[in-house]
Image: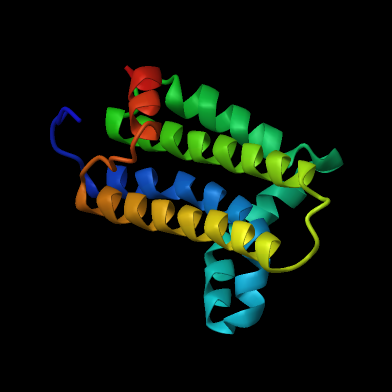
Amino acid sequence: MAWRGSTTWADKIFACLPYLLPLYYGLEFGRFLLVQFPILNWLIVPLAPVNFIFNLIPFGLGPLVVFLVLYLLVVRNTNISHFVRFNAMQSILLNIILFLCSLLLGIFVVIPSGFVQETLYNMVFLGTLAAVAYSVVQSLRGQYAEIPTISDAAYMQVQ
């Protein structure tokens, strides 16, 4: 990714915040691992503000409102640094992928609650956790997180 100047600490922090959303939605897939490894429950602590915002907006429209605010007021706002907008768009794309995974796994409800279902859910959760952790670390370093295909799509949207 082309380097677009230096990033301030404020940009680095604001670039990390959108990644709370894919982590929040990824917890749906982590239910098997969270039961087996209670130490992973520390992931829930930073998600309390996200849960509060989602519950603050009535009729279950919280996720839609947060998506629209993030997309329209951050990604499309050229007054915000490219670094923050790129990371916000990348987190939105991760959310879309998680939504598609939940749809696909919902279709395969016929899979008995056993090894195959747990393996699929664990794979999606660990993939989400790895992508979010990598993106947050890269953001804190002031570098663009390069996730194949997702970063290219985010870069095309933010230009």
